[in-house]
Image (tube, rainbow, N blue to C red):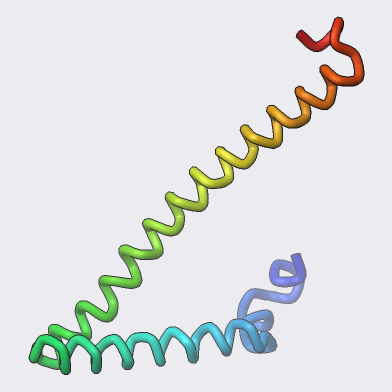
Length: 94
């Protein structure tokens, strides 16, 4: 919540994590461009497109995976709680 109180730009400016993430992002794009170019012989522009599009698609995949994973975890936790309640009082929680 400090981001809202102090302003988002201040939070970004003062955050080592954001800086590190940004440097990682730039490094990832450059490395991916180089790998695609060397492996396929693609132009630097084509390699750049792959380097940007691929992480974007992976991010969507990760978002979907995270949502599904949380649903499964919540379901398992719910089942475990019901099991614990049944062990305490089997007549109430059928």
